[in-house]
Length: 260
Image 1 (tube, rainbow, N blue to C red):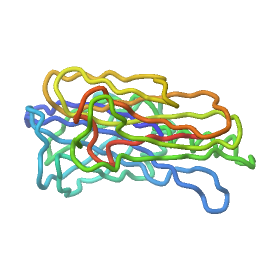
Image 2: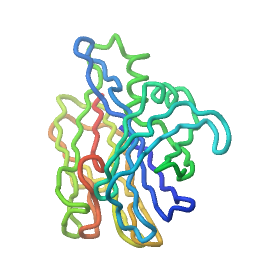
Image 3: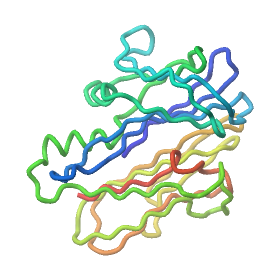
């Protein structure tokens, strides 16, 4: 799964939004082919000082085909939601899945209590949606369709307490044969300035993500790696050099391993 994330400045409301469009994989009972079960939009609303908001908000999400003007491809809400530490999540209709699969450039607009937070580009297709499309189109006849291992951030706290240079999420998996593996990792952080996140595979750093915000606020990091691994046990983790700034529970952090 790939999470496509963006940060929006609210025009006149004095709020900040960090959001993510997420596709979830499920397995068909008979065909055992990965398919998209739900597409959701998740966000965190904060004030301009980076403090998460709490309480009731009416949230609407619209997906457009242009950065300005254009046509609405799909929408959800307005829905009355209760913010907890700024967090909200809203399910999107099937039309959004179709739009993301078929349209290369889309823009998401969040409306909170009737006020638009602006539009931001959806930079890449959520991986679970693309994987579903590819498997359904090209691999329906295979006896060994891809397997997905997903481990979410189950720590408490927002952000939780953690030591410097420690693993934030750990995902062990075992391969029965040498095969191609695709790994993605997503996590949000709350701090001021620069914060890095590393993707560690079998004790070695494979890639890293750099985030920066001028004030203390939430911002997402996304990491991805693909390659061939030998049969046997493997471990992948998201490691942070800074203490106690990364994560805000299961909706905001996960490692996904797609085994081909």
